[in-house]
Length: 260
Image 1 (cartoon, rainbow, N blue to C red):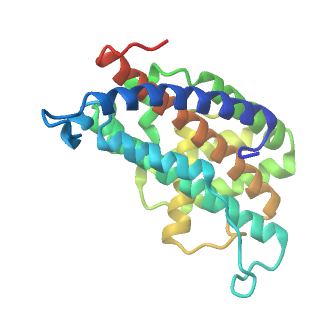
Image 2: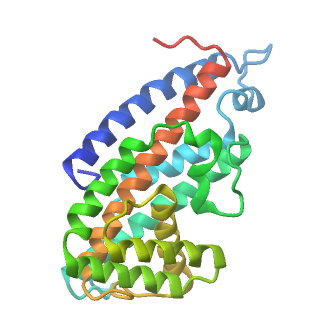
């Protein structure tokens, strides 16, 4: 399995099949209609149908989905399985975030992003609000309630980790967003929003890249960080698949391409 619980994998299989079928229609049309008078394909014509920003987003997303990570124990200081698994999940979550950044560039190029200053608020922009992310959000919050909120020791540990990310954030906006997430986790009652989840993922990425943190940094138990990272990875992948499908459908509609 690529994603973690069974329901997430079902969502992935369904969304990825939908994406592949629609992208094939668009790609075939682009190939057939991007040739000059000499019958040679021209990149500028192809870009009218599948712009470079969309191609790069698709590449990064597929890399994030297909990523497999291992360690050469002759060199890597991963003394036990929990340490190794934590680093794997951090790397996967970060790769999913880098794919998200490619998605943001695509959304910027299409004028779909009205919140350029805050990456973690991308899904609140008008164009992306029309994408049916509610099922992904419901699935994500059901896992948070079952695996974090309902277990007091886990919830306290994750709340402390959110506070750690907040303290290590240099962005006032992100610091505030992470503080809000920490408060929600402490109470264990309110669902997290897309902005909350993206703020967590962005905070994790920033501390890992800029602060040189270890697998156990900011948390008491490895398993709790692993739990959160898996939830965030699945959310990032599934929500981005929704966006890339929306993008392909937009191009199919814009060029009046026949689709069964």
